[in-house]
Image 1 (cartoon, rainbow, N blue to C red):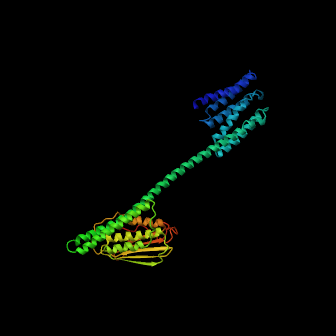
Image 2: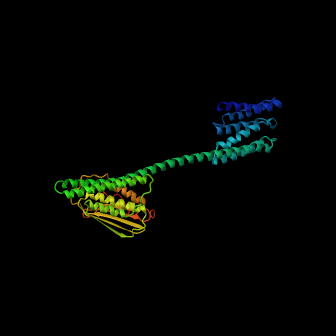
Image 3: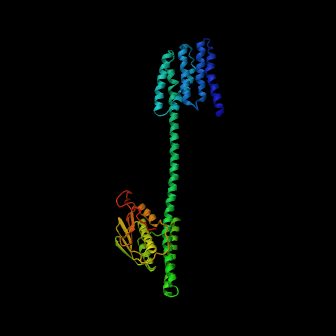
Length: 389
């Protein structure tokens, strides 16, 4: 259809101008014929209205204006008003914003000049063949701009949706990785250390060897149970809401595994949000795992103190009394733990003590979302640890 558009416009212009002119008697003077030719040229510019609307509006308007200068008003063809009715919408479509207002003022001046030059032409005819079409072009342009704006915002929303989905996937992957690190890292650390102890006891302490392998088996079962719980949680299955009793369990298991650890609870432990209790448990678990890895034989002290608004978890261990086992960590344990604590709205500080020991302290909101530390605020937990997680 586009290929036939231009020939159709040219044919329509020829018919609209020449047929009424010939019907009323073709003009015989040179000036009158010049008027007809200029009006035809003005109309034929409409062939390029789609690709060059501004050029067509300006050039077509100029060619339409010239007959008023070169011919008397009696020779001005009435059919020419059909051309101006097609040029004025292009003036409205071609410009937008403040430029559209300038074009509107220019069109008003243009019509006044035409009315003054073509004296016997009714001002009503000029207005009827120009103003309504200009307003129609303005409405069409505004609708097109609104549609373009809606399409642009739709693309932006789609891009934001994809970005948020990608961020959500990354966040979920990070959360799963952190949970797997805590579960597997703790279980494997206990089993490796106990296996090393069992190797030393084999052959001369059967009872101790049996206890060691029992601790290994218990650690493996606990790790399996934690993994099953994580899988159920990821699958959408309702699981038991965690509480601070898990801290007592992990401390008890660590003590049975040979770690010299004590745990003390202070303050109100009731009514804490489940995410707070879960992160508190992970703080203790990660700290005990690191103590097993890097401070063998050292005493470990766990203190959990809190209320409904703030929960403080502190884990300290003395300096190592023996050679640490060859059990390297991933280096992301404390870093990932700090990120989870900050995401919950808390703070975590980890670093060496003056006597060569190590201290991990986490402050968590009792009610999730009550506060969030500013990254540049006082007490913000920066990465102060050189101990791998």
